[in-house]
Amino acid sequence: MKPMIVFVTAATADEATRIARALVEERLAACANIVSPIVSVYRWEGQVQEDREVLLIIKTTDARLPALIQRVKALHSYQVPEVIAMPIADGSADYLRWLLDETQ
Image 1 (cartoon, helix red, strand yellow):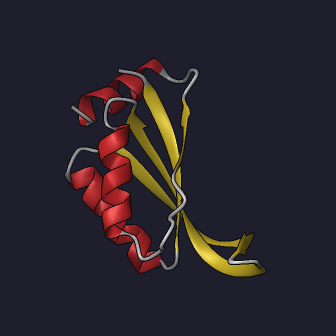
Image 2: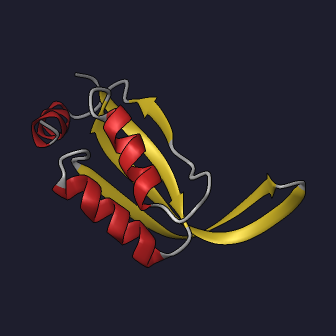
Image 3: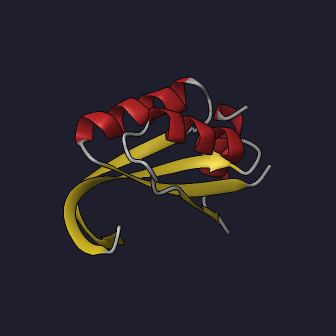
């Protein structure tokens, strides 16, 4: 298993917390940080939008990623939620071992 970091934006802090708790409780993620507020500028349905959102920074593994994506989609209020994953190239060995242990 390889450690991953996943970014998900949410409409509200309550929604972000609900998603984070579900992912950690279900061992799809070891940890989720909630960063608020952020301002997102994006194009949606032909219009440039600007909204305050909440950012989730989620730590998981490549093995858990498909289930995590499906769970985020099921819990999220957006029609097309942002779910972007990147591998963690390196880090504290103790932390990465903990991350792997918590997502098994």
